[in-house]
Amino acid sequence: LLVAVTASNAVGLLADSLVFLWLAFGSLAFLPGQLVGKAWMTHAAIAVIAAIQRRRTAATA
Image (cartoon, rainbow, N blue to C red):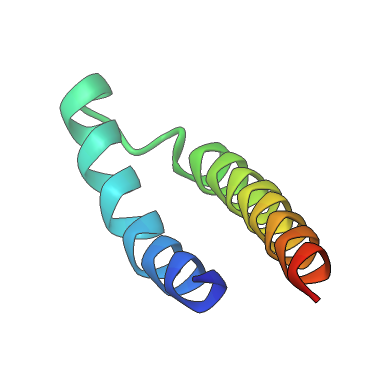
């Protein structure tokens, strides 16, 4: 699951941001901030998923 989340976000990060910013603002001026924000949220989501997986593994062991 962690590999899938990481791969999906890595691939979609740039493409999604480019399309969104172009359609929403007609400019890519906010691209660096958009990428940084998405990267932080991806890392946060991965940390939460990893913690849940560790907890489930410990509970079943």
